[in-house]
Amino acid sequence: MLYGLETLIPNGKNLHLINKQYKKMLKQILSLTTNLADPAVYIISGQLPAEAEIHKRALISFDNICRSGKSSMEWKIAERQLSIKNMRSNSWFIEIKKLCLKYDIDDPYSICFVVPLSKLLWKKLISTKVNGYWEKRINDGSKLYPTLSYLEMSYKVGQCHPIARTVDANIRDIARIPVRLKIATGTYIFQTNRAAFNQNKIDVVCMLCNYSEETLAHFLLGCTRLEYIRKDIL
Ligand SMILES: [Zn+2]
Image (cartoon, rainbow, N blue to C red; front, side):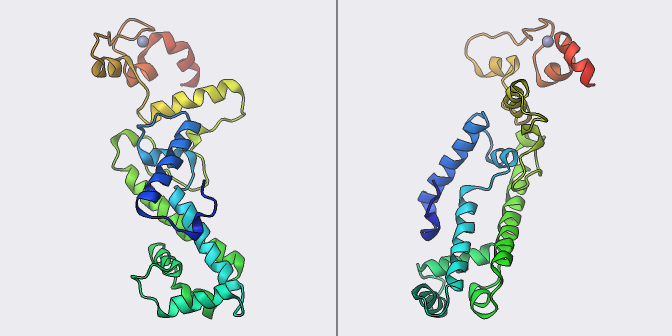
């Protein structure tokens, strides 16, 4: 889906559509509902947003151009555009300059033409800066969602959240992941939620014990019918 997009660096409506589709796919893979708060998708999967992936690839392409040598056409264009174009230009190289500002990377002109970093160091620098930017942004954003209080501030690029992992991948444990994810993100439907949002009359009482209202607290801590499972864990 992202193939070749680093040569276009989409923005505005196009970027919005790509981000939306990417989030939707992640949610489907994780068996999460589509109305789930955005930061949760990234916190649970440890994936970068599509936008960040495109930016990383664009910055790496730029580095390849800088490395292609003074005799190559791309290098000559890069030098020309970066020397004479101002920030209002639509040039791809000016987009790269904007990305460097966004991610707090030194000016591309000085980085690539004056003191070239090794390929490995440049890749490392891009990863550190881009990952750092999105970790801060998504973690800060997660604080704004009351439903994410159990997940907030735990986004780390490349690390799947512990709640979506299993110790050994057997089918029983895997089947439990979607339930856990729904509980942690506040999207698990209890009888009390069902009653509040349904026009038909629905009984709020727990269908397992028929004793008290089925809420998150009851399900996890109170329900007597689930005591035999809970006992071992507690
Ligand atoms: Zn119960």
